[in-house]
Figure 1 (tube, rainbow, N blue to C red):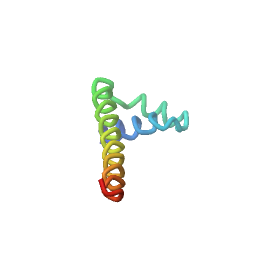
Figure 2 (spheres, rainbow, N blue to C red):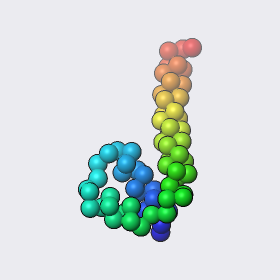
Figure 3 (cartoon, helix red, strand yellow):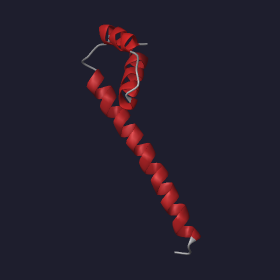
Length: 67
């Protein structure tokens, strides 16, 4: 359950929209030793998803033009 809270806290911090009371409640209950690993892992995952979409779109447009 703590991992889910950390993932939720990191995702909310990526988007920058969060209620102050929820943020303070999460900070009181989080193990900070694992937080950097969760943040880096989620950043890599989001980056890989964006790269996958870009490669998918670039590949489909390249074949549509006859290259």
